[in-house]
Image (tube, rainbow, N blue to C red; front, side):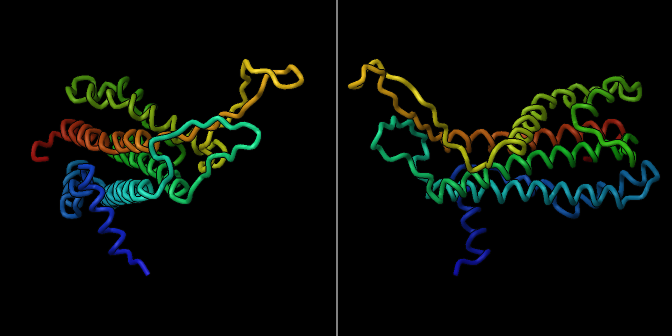
Length: 251
């Protein structure tokens, strides 16, 4: 029976093979706790919510890494990973959705969900420090940015521009994630369309065929990995913005 240690070893190997950054190295426990404690002293607030938020950020980033690793491992067992389009006439067999493909899409969608959750943790972190967090109102990242742009407390901060510039990535992630969560089964990724040919059958009618398309798993994987790696810039932009707001120089 395969063990968790073996699975983790395989995940490390695919991260090395594709030169994917391990972002959790940037969020080690000692640094997280020290940062939370310094912020709490500066603002004279309880550090527990800050520590909890940074811990959630760490584990959410880690979850994204696990899903990416499992997605890439699944790709090795998938059929037609580069995608394929097949024309099916009356007696032709359709393309089969293999187990490797099912695992790939399962982890692909979960990766997007984890990336979305990272953006939520970053939003909550900013809300706690800038006093936007309330019990009866939840901010999404783009809504929070609009509030920050109008808030006079941040009008002179040089780092605000980089923070606001993150919005296009948040919008992309949110749109894709919400689309997946409200769509049909995430494993239903084969597109089927009925088309006519210029050839006539014995009754003088156009011959009809079904066109079945399987997506390119390699390109889909690259897209989600790119957004995962962009999280490093997002985390840095949030920390730099907070540091300027609080007058920190050591982080």
